[in-house]
Length: 589
Ligand SMILES: [Ca+2]
Ligand SMILES: [Ca+2]
Ligand SMILES: [Ca+2]
Ligand SMILES: [Ca+2]
View 1: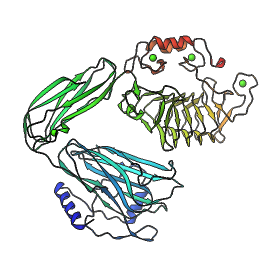
View 2 (view 1 turned 30 degrees about the horizontal axis):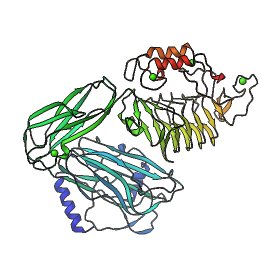
View 3 (view 1 turned 90 degrees about the vertical axis):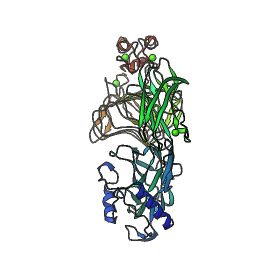
View 4 (view 1 turned 120 degrees about the vertical axis):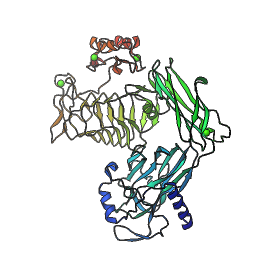
């Protein structure tokens, strides 16, 4: 980069961030090694040291931890160095690296001014710097944008490492792509944090590097109105919700008699006239909406252009709202992840057959149902956790395959029921939490069927078939319920009394003597209508369903277990399904 250009940019930054103290931090290898010791965790615990850009300094020759002379040192930089975008628009930057040598792991942290920008997305783009040869040989430790680092700044945190046996990558490439939404005119740094930017090679050496932060600028137009809309993405019929239409004066002049409108499916439902809107100020029009019917609605906030306003693309904001009892994929939302984001606690998400290449993070209490266990497939494409289950949720009716972990559980009170988990390194991993239930699943052809490091989880009625390690139980889980355990394809005990329960326990952990005391000698099959999973369809199952009769999600009596056909309502059809199977027991299937 030409020095004059760098100085010009640096000058612009100082002007754009007047009064901001920028500390220069000297990075000795020692400091970096200290940083490495806390590499994998807790960015939050690190002290806030604002980055010092070493703008305009000549590049020095680098020396890595081994003492080997390597020539040009690596540069981690924001590309493009300077970005411009209009208020109300979105732009992207890359955080890239040049002159990398055997790069194996990196972390960086980038600060931005939340008064001006919102970080809306951060991702590893196609062909990024650490694209592994084997798709599973990468661990994304952290990849997130948070708008609330403190009262003035947000932070984008990224930490990625390759996994053995991958080799480090050399040359130039992209570390991450970040998208920002422009909230207001102004200027700010896209500021790479000095102590939190660490690059490590495949010899576990922390490598010397320089940082080159980015700069953003949005110049206000003479006249510019900006409209943004807030509305839930999903509602249940007859449920009320506020639609907030915000209008903001992003121009250089005070405005009078500004009009803002709200329309639903093309019909204007509310209008406001704002007498005075000074530079930078905003006004919110709230509308209480109670949609009646199951449908997808287009909701649009709009401000007619002012005289002399050129930037009118940001004068309207539209959102689609799905109104339904169950959230349907792909009818309401194309991906499972989008549906989970739109869901509220207590919602049911019903997924139609198809193969969904996703990594689904569930962080609220939802019921996620696949319509057909064999054909409704979530595929991790060989990487990471296919489903990250939390929030006290239930997942059933899916084939979950091709991940580092099929289902990863790290909160209490979740249920994994009637799924097929196959072809992952770990079918299920329960990490340091209890009170989860794993039942009725077929867990097959994984490196390890299930790994649990915690007591207090109940694992029964599953079929463990041909996993290299069927189960690894580091603390004692409970492997049976009501005198019935799991089916183990490598169990070779006898069943003298022919009650379909093996005579001898199946030993899960020899050292702890953790056992499935009631191993099934036949594979377990789910019995339709057996809501309480006791092997018989009888009055007890009707007693589960009856109290929820007439209920739907967010209704006081709602119970997703009672919704036998997973259509988001407990009605006569659910009772008929139980009635049609009345008297059946699992043993006669
Ligand atoms: Ca405008
Ligand atoms: Ca027996
Ligand atoms: Ca029953
Ligand atoms: Ca139903």
